[in-house]
Image (cartoon, rainbow, N blue to C red; front, side, top):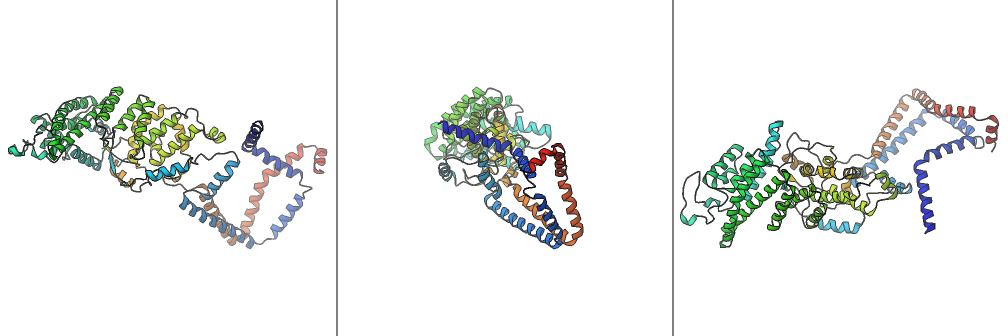
Length: 568
């Protein structure tokens, strides 16, 4: 053990010396070469080389520069081919893989447990539609939030495509095939025959509301909702007014409470009749959707009004009462509220239930898991210290969690690190797209800021080149996200595209070297005398500082000491 400790200390000393004292070694070697210039006959050799260069014709320089241009061009072609195929520079990869460990560096990007990762990757590649649009679980209120933004800025935060998707969602959630069998119709004032009367006559949706959800004009929808309320206590009419007419969250909450009272009565009646036939079952399913929607929005109102613990209780009760209704993604609302309470143990418990291979992932799940693991090490994490001593187990877990999150949605770090301005999130998001990144960062940026050092850890991870090329933990990144995001996001927002690969330094370097040497070859061939004068002037200027230093050294050292050193 003592011998092993001594060897480790010796190795660390050598690493430290090569890391910080290489300049001393360099100047020491120059000093030795200068002292031994007489025994090594350096001056004579330089004179011989100078005479040889003076006898060379311009054709030699043309051939030299042309050959250099050809070689650098071949290196450029090979580098470009390797970059296009593997996503990284060959020279950079060799230097990182072989040279950096010799100098004491550690490759943080090497994933551990590769067999496990590959097995997870096979099971997590899901056969789903690449550009399926999802309802935003944390979507804002149109009247109290989106419209207020329009009043202040004069800009429309929602696109027509986004609002059209919301209208389709409302018709899907709040209507059923038996709604046309209502006993009263406010538009036609007619009564259906008794055999057509729906037993759940006091359903939460009247034909007026059925038409209201299809209206494009907001004022027409609001007028239809008021008209429906004149007929009966219509739950979905209260929902529409709370979403679009209420100008504050307090007003919206009052309307949702009225909707809850009407919706619970309809739900209880349809629950008793659901086994009497297919139409009753459809009505009960519709009434269930209405009730869940109302309770979820009431919980969101409580969260926005600062009653976070109340909101958490409402969300937990809702998930316990309707465990199979995953379409609303209520667990994402719960995660955000628990993070606000800094109840990280409860957050971990929710993640353990929903961060499963068989379930569809989201930026909220992936980045929240990364935040929890980063929280354990972020306050003491230092990239410089980690590069010297290597990553600990906890740091490796944090880096892998961030790697997983960035691979799922690479647009999020730009917003969390405030490298790009946020806008109001849309009502629908595209998973792994810019719209999802905006929706996540809009609500979770404050939670990342609250954890000390978490953003620094995320920023240091961004320095790892091309994280998406390190291996697919998820199904391959879709190529159609840009088109879908442009439909969902307003025109004044610059859509973030899949991170484009930046050309490695060595490709740019070889391209510049190839162009420069080719230009020198052409100029030397066309103007040999002028280029010769230019080369001599350049070399004399280049060696002028060295000659000046050597003259100073000779003047400082005593002649006797200098004579003895040269005779060694």
